[in-house]
Length: 129
Image (cartoon, rainbow, N blue to C red; front, side):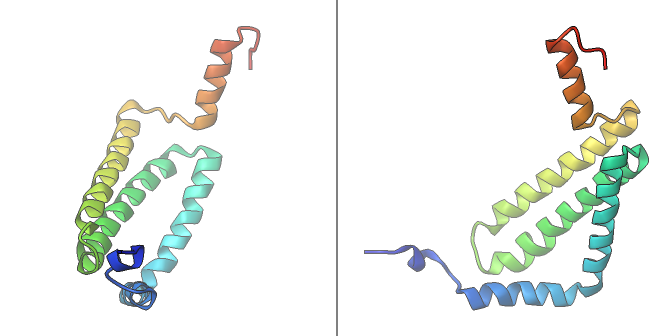
């Protein structure tokens, strides 16, 4: 009888070793990514359209990097499904890039709270906020 452990091609030490290798190879980029994450959060709360567009582009670059470097590179050595994960990450990165292009072309930024307010107005004609 097979167990789930028989299907795993690596152990926990191999998994942590993979992350350790990748993080040591790209060390200073984690600090830049963290700082940019703070900018993304600031942009989302303040509705700064230019920062949100740049954030979409930056997130698309991160998704492309994760798909290529991790899933199609390092992780592919450990798992046969890594190629499909990598392709999914590339597709998601493309969607983020398309989102940035749509915001640039339309000149309007639709945020969740704006859509929520529009929905409230549609459902309740007595709300004029």
